[in-house]
Length: 257
Image 1: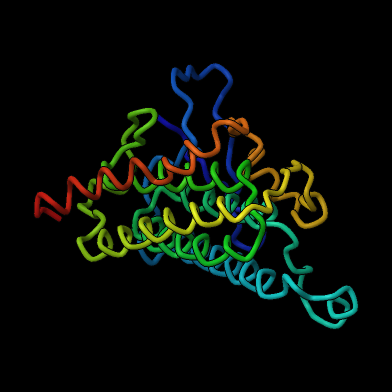
Image 2: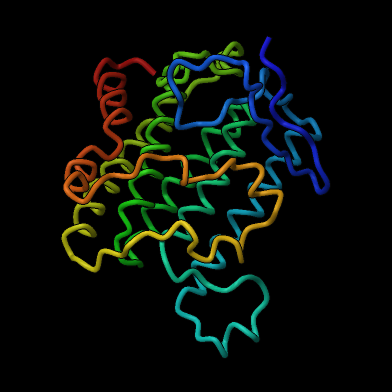
């Protein structure tokens, strides 16, 4: 039996537990292993997870809004300094995605991931293009949405918890997701074409803006991805959300929710 992967800590935060070293893994997933069962609706753990994610997304939104602040302004405002690079923002969103995914709870995963997908689309045009941070983040979201539509991790084939209750992505959510995917793909091409590509550094303000609990929970975050080489960037841009787009096309064209 798969062990519960969420362990409560102070403030309702849940840290990820690494799988035992003896556990074989034929195909590695872009997503962390979810807990064995979905969080019970209305439970303290579900509320704690929801509140934690809401708080982190609000914090990220605040840092995005302060992206153009001067050093003088930053001393007069509460909260962490504004983002200077999309790489830092992507790393923080990646950490939140992991927490959401580990919850193993579709009623949390679906709405929160839709909100994050919208945030990525809104945020990324405000910064220079950082392909080695942007593309892996979109790949992770693509894997998550496709997995939720199939009820299993599309990389490993492992079934997802929470789907035995019948919760699925609704037609309305699929239509919203399709709009987000199409908008993101167009915007990503525009951002890639306009130039101003920024080199990615794995140490971009991360140590200064990430708590010890978050570092443990994300197990390395974006550093676990295989980043595209320069000559592969155009191809990866064209492939953004390719799994999700294909799944949406099949599902919506067939007329079934």
